[in-house]
Length: 342
Image (cartoon, rainbow, N blue to C red; front, side, top):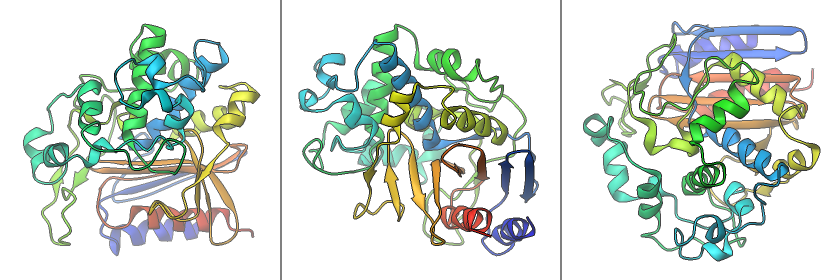
């Protein structure tokens, strides 16, 4: 474990990140390390790790017969997507729809990335507005003919959850996952712009490339621009409980869990090297040859990784309280140190 602590210390001292934590569970063995003043109780914004929660809810609805992964977007959200008749729910969840990623829309970039964030951080935006922004651009490829990371897919999945259940996305996450697993620090923020529980500050350089760019406190924000694609809050302990339950088969029947972990290679997409994407989760082959399973995510001021063994028994959760530098490289070094064959 000294190797892990060394990586944490170096991330702050040499990598310039403001704070970092790592939480390891391996059967009965536990370890927690930090640098930069972090605490084990910290709540933090988990970014695209939200997608694992969204997919879990959709797959539960599939298991209950309330929807099918083969349903089209047009059937569930008529008129929302021009080629929705060709895009299935499965293609939303495994990122093979070809739909444009709304977070790359010029107007939304100007509002939520860069200096515009400081002015617009408390703006509220609806899922329909996010999808409309994406529909202003042509698809990157025909549905099922490629792989491309798009937050639009998971906003649509969140809308489908609400349409099918008649309840809000936040209610379904709470009712189906957070409450049964006693995830007391995990929630969809809704109208809350501040974090509800104990937390460290989240810091941002506003995605500016200058290494000397000014650092801003980004802790408070309206996360509606991320919503079912990346808006949730959690803790390291809660993420351990969630993935242990998910990978251990406590949240999904065997058929749906197999669907979740039927993947598409991301090779050639410019995404994280050595990864395969399932339904809202991914797995990564480390340089040591070990494959780790789980997910990761980023949002203004926060980067998170939660990866481990396929059965969920050996897992590492990490969070960086800043959005610059090389967080994925730091997390990969932590995973290599923890999961390389000894």
